[in-house]
Image (cartoon, helix red, strand yellow):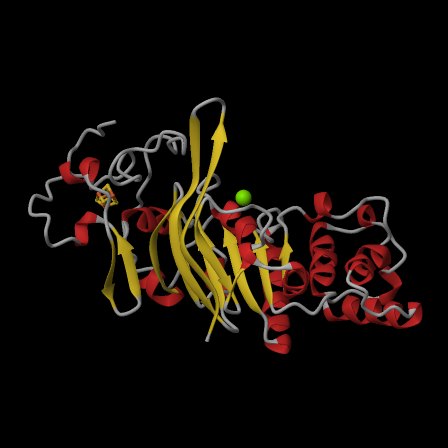
Length: 331
Ligand code: SF4
Ligand code: MG
């Protein structure tokens, strides 16, 4: 069953007098109950903005976000309150999101206080201890301050806080990007364990494809405010269709058994263009080695090429006859 639907979502920001930053420019996807949907792309591609717009922290410019059948931007008072309980966020930098002057106990208790859960102090403290144990910490940590912990432990505190309200859905915005590789796997394992125990649904945001496969059921790849490819995690690694996905995969340093052998390393040239003046046609064309004439003129349509495998790229558009690549990148 569908837990979350994002339909043709646009989030534009006004910059200066008459410029518009198209952070998210018409993105659609669904997240099913109990799954992990990985949302991947370089920084600046709009993935965090999508997370914040889904949370209702940003209003949307166009389109809609539907959670449990309700449009999150049109909720009434009590519905908003319940929604904020059901959907929680974990952040990239737990240190920045944990109040340095609060103890772990206060940090984890705060959402419960706001929502009036466990009004009895003793029960609330028991709940804090229980949450600490669920994330692999101990009750002895309850009276300490964030700076006394390692990065991985701080992320566990952030996870405990997110779980305090017993949510159904968690948006994890690059929760492991700031951690050492050895610690990344531990946090991913913890998130998977919690998902199983609590039936959680995750939107897992990442800037590359190296770790997401270990947690995601399906993955959507974003580039400059657009979704360019979406499919099951295994299929994305075995048979990436979009040139940008291929480039992201070829950037994974350690050979991955699931990544087809003999694949050439593909280095993207040039910078990520500004979302204020995105390229015409396909937004990826300024860096795409396969860009052809049509790419500058027409935006590629979102097509289902194989079962449950969607891509937006003219290479797969049968109506385009001339697929000769333009060697020099045209701006
Ligand atoms: Fe490259 Fe053209 Fe496909 Fe865009 S539409 S990814 S520029 S081939
Ligand atoms: Mg971000």
